[in-house]
Length: 266
View (cartoon, rainbow, N blue to C red):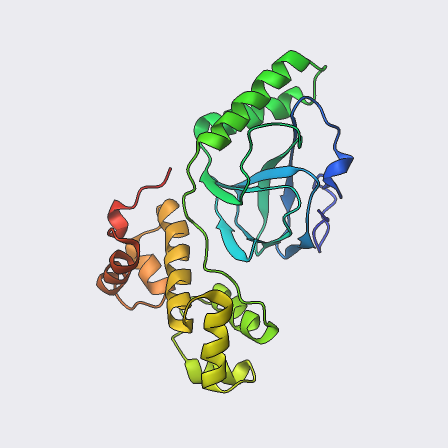
């Protein structure tokens, strides 16, 4: 991980490699802050990693997917999986690396709700890291933390797969930033330097969805993030370009199978 693009001397340093952190018991726990505009380009770690935001928001791209992390949501990234992180505003996080020999641990990228117990256990390990070593206690805490991660179900807050082609990916990046943009196949195809027919064909080949379906799933994913933060349906509807709460509720219910008011988050 690299420091933010606009360094702040009050911010704690961010380790450059997971290997730089000492292996103590099973977990190596750390925390930090990131400035607005922080970007950690594509990279991987030699150990599994779990991180969650305690303040602010982040966009994590991993395994061909975009994951919006709000406070209370964490992402597990297995060893060797290439990922990148972007923060549009200031953010704070807790994180830990897991010794590769520790079992069990999730084999796939997973997004989970951070339970009060999991957060308390991580905070306890952060405090203990400043004290004299107590290997038995650290192992006990490590085991409990891994058990919480393994027991947590994936909350499904993952955006649809990102395309590989630069032209298509640029369009999808714009939609991720501006989800309220209306469907405009001709305009998107022109921006990507393609005919409408080639644009739609390649888009489906690389994402498994039509551009309209992809845009809809993206908006539902972002809606899940805001619903988990208790943002009002009226604000969500406006921010996603639905025009009215009724229109958003119908679209959400059709896509997700339940009305937004009944959506449960960890």
